Image (cartoon, rainbow over all chains, first blue to last red; front, side, top):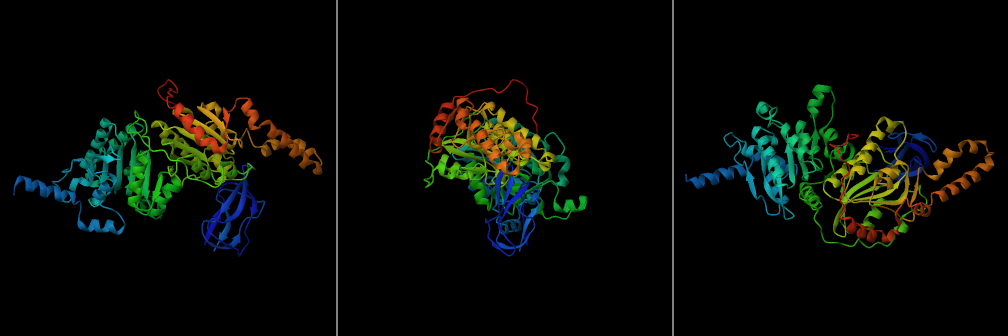
Length: 70
Length: 509
């Protein structure tokens, strides 16, 4: 099981995956908005989305888990 | 036995290193014998070796576990010390330490680079009185490193552990190259950590190459095997002068690779949308000339050596693709270190700015973002090498300052037509100035009002307006940037300045 954490504090502008989706390494899984910038979040490895932990519009701190993979 | 035969036999014995079984053990880990490493590193092998007979009287301690001498790299003399991990795991006895100190003294006298090929378990505790506390004990090695820092290039290739005090050898070098899986740095071993603080942790997790090259920032370059590590060291030295009094060597100029897309095409119009800064770097520099430092550490800022028309430069570039290119404590620290390194060895600096600013929020304030940001700004201010500042897209707030903005005496501050310089971006600015007014407006009027104000704001910070105010020196098309920089660099070569008269700054470290 691997987790995808937020690299930076900000608000989730777009969540691009749903539970059960297959993701590949380097796929964009979410876009954060922080410092008025769009910050794409990519998966580090292949897997399936086990859980979308944070919702669109939610504030997240650096290191918070956004998505759990299986 | 004849004299000659005796000498020959003894030398042969010493050059074999430690016991056969330790050679085998190293082989299993993909580790080369120390003399084979040196053969790969040096153009024509060891030129001379001093202290070869060190501790020959003792059983099983050939060369006392370290080889010191001179050789050539890229045709130029270098000094080296290289631990032999087949001899008591490369540990340090009194003569080991004395040999290292002597080669440092030699490098100082000759004013040539010094390479540390480290693979050592640390001090031999049984020999501590002779090698640890005294005037020429191990502490002297670190004292000498500090003294030599910025005077001659000091390069560390870490092939194995550098434990406890030994971990400070890499810490004081200009560059640390680490081999995945084998290299490690740590003050206390996992066994020690368990005994003393009760922590259970693996060596790899606590002090492995991956960790140091991506988290702690103690490692600069991560490679997969020893041969690549040695190639990296040779390549690194090709950007460096022999010492601080010399200029970096020039190399053959190469055009950048051919790309289908122009600079304008890779830059998104919306400042908030990221792009990949590497794409711009490779369109500016000589083909295949990028030598990146700390690629895996704080990747929101890119630092690396490159060549412009054959001339070595140091590139400091924001990477909008990672964390928006925002500066963090680690990226500011990384920049400060790299700028200092380039400035020490006459390597001109090229800043490529696309930066929304320094990170804000509780997390980074607690981490001392102000203190770390100050390090970067201090190092950049103090640098007296040619400083070329290029505003690629946005340069907001202290981000403009940190990236060698106009007030920090760059030799030029150029802008691409896509540049936008301001205290903050239009969205943040309009919110800051008109927050109350926006709140007072009926909901259906707000959007139009905000858009109108943003448009006014953008006009106010239009790059041609800033050029007209002479904030920037010139506006250059992306595809002409390389030639512009080559021309300027050639002219700025004669630059000489002393930054300030004093003993030294009180560094914001």
